[in-house]
Length: 129
Image 1 (tube, rainbow, N blue to C red):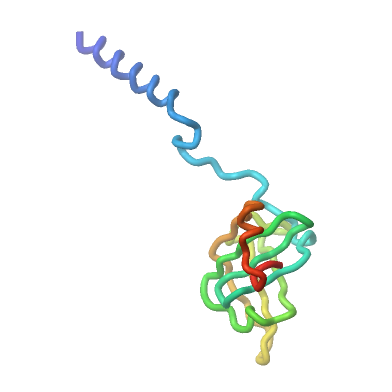
Image 2 (image 1 turned 45 degrees about the vertical axis):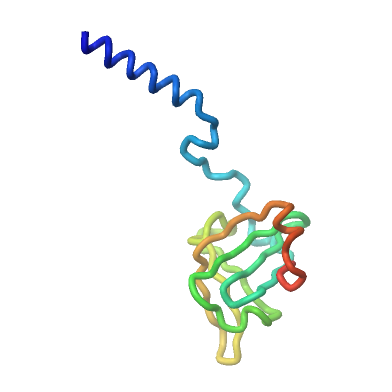
């Protein structure tokens, strides 16, 4: 008798899981988050912790830096270095190099994310790459 109850409970749980919307299940990483460094076409830094990078014509990525990066918010020369080859898929793959009066400064990246078209349109003028 207890075997039948356990089977019925298992079947009920399975039915509940299959009825859940896909988004409510474990989140899947979004595809197309990676980009080639050679496709970078511009940047803007509204402050010393955030960098917006334009990739190609339509895509903009937000880089959240691990700490303050000196002179990044007014610098006209930045380098984006990939640690894993020539593509960047996560913050661990990237490093920003800014040129200061005392020489190049390397700034580790905490995270990156691709902005939606609505988020790009909502960026203030100073933050648009």
